[in-house]
Amino acid sequence: MKRIYLLSSLALLGLGALFAYTQGQKPLDPFEEAMRQRQMYLETFGILPGELFAEEGKELFYRKGPSGNTLEACDFGKGPGVLEGVYAILPKYFPDSKKVEDLESRVYTCMQTVQGFKPEEIKRDEVRAITTYIASFSSKAKIQVVPKHPAELAMYNLGRELWYTRAGARDMSCAVCHDQYAGQRVRLSPVRSPKQGLGNEWPAYRFEADKLYTMEDRIDFCYESIAIPKPESYSEVHVALTLYMLAEATKAGHSFEELPFFTR
Amino acid sequence: MKRRSVLAMGFLLLGLGLSQVGPFKARLEAAIKESGEEFARVMLSQDRGQALCTQYRDKIPADLMPKFLEEQKALIKYPADGKLLGDWKNGEEVFTDPKRGNCYACHQGVADEVAYGTMGPSLLNYGARGQSEAVVRYTYEKIYNAWAFVPCSLMYRGGVHGLFTPEETADLVAFLLDPESPINRR
Image 1 (cartoon, rainbow over the protein chains, first blue to last red):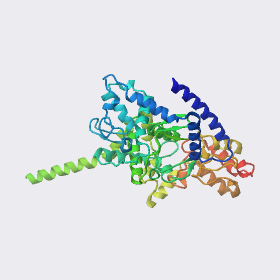
Image 2: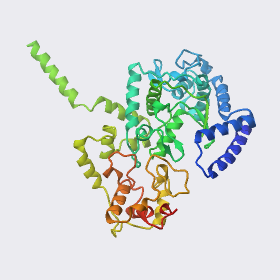
Image 3: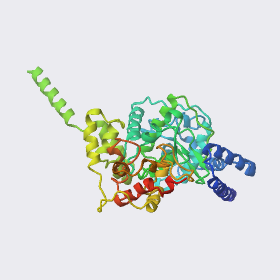
Image 4: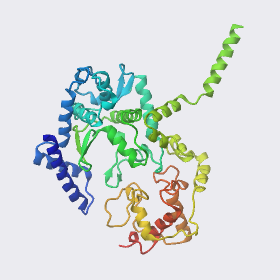
C-alpha cells in the first residue's frame, strides 16, 4: 500500500518533470537530465523508484512457493542462496535445466522447478521485481560474461547472428545502429555499442516511461521501435542477444552501473 | 572388400552432410520460431536485399554490387501522374510522423525542431541544391529506396516497404526542395 502511494506520487512528479524537460528549447543531454531527476527524487522522497522494485523483489524472493521453498533454494550461478555477483556472470549454462539462462529466465525456471509454481501462475511483474532484487547484488560489479561451455558458445554465435539480422519494414538490425553509428543520437537518445558498455544499466527505472525495465524489456523496446514484434519473454532470442552484448562488454572491460539504475 | 565398404560409407556420409541445410542456420531458425510467432513471421521473411546485407554484415562484395543496385532500382515505383514534386505541407507531415517517414529520428530538419537524431546528414536547407530534373529524381529515388544508392545503409527503404506511397514520396521531395518549405526558410 505504502508502495502504491509512493509510486503514484513519484509518477506525478515524473510527469511534471517530463513536461518541463520537453518544453526546453535546447536539446538536453539525456544522461545529465536523468542524474538531475535522480537527485530530485532522492531529495524529495529519500528513496529511488528502483529501490522500491528491489524491495518488492526481496519480499517475493523470500515468499514460499507451493512446494514450500523460497528462492533461496535456487542456484543462480554460484550455488543455492548466493546472490552476490551472480548477475555479473549471467547468462550461463545450467546443468539442471540443460539451458543457457539469463537472470530473468533463471528466476522463471526456479519458480517452477524449485518453488512449484505453474508457468501460468508466474506474473511478469514479479519476475521483474525479483530480477531487480538479485541484480542489486551486482551493483557496479565488473561484467564477467565469458562463454566457455559449448552451449554458451552456441548461444553467443546465435546472438551475434541475430545482432546482424536485418528484417522488418524498417530494414533494421541491432548492428546497423549500435555498431556503425555508436556515439550518435536517435532523436535525443545516445546510442552505444556493446564495446562501449551497452547493456550495463539494466534493470533500470526509466523516468520518461515511469516503468522499470529489465534487459529483456529493453531488448523488446528496441525491437518494437524498429517494427519487429517483440519476442516472448524468457526466449532464446533474449538470452542469445544478452549473452552476445555482455560478452562484448566484458572484453572491453566494462562494469555495471549502480543497479537498479535510474535513467531516462 | 572391407576397405571398399568403408569408402562407400564415407561417400554416403559426405553426401548426407552436404545435402543438409547448414546446422547453424537450422538452429537459428528454430530459436527464432520458438521465440514467438509474430517475431518469427517478420524475422524469417527477409527479402533478398535484407538477406544479403545480413550475410555480408552490411558490406556487399564488389562483384555482387552491380546486381544488388540494379535489383533495388527495379523496386522503385513512381506516382501515376509522373510528378515527383508534390505538396510540401503534406510532405512535412509524412516526414514527422513516426509511423511513416520518422525522419527526425536520424536527420535535422526544420530549424526549430531540436529533438533530431544525428545518424544521418542534416537536411536543413536541402533546397539549396535547386530543382533540376536530376536533383528531383535523385531525391525521389533516394527517399523511396535508399539501398538503390547505398546498399545496406541505415536509411531504410520506406517506399519499398509501403511506409509511404509514391505520392507521399513526391510530397517529401517537395518538403525538401520547395523554397517555401520551412526546411529552406530561416
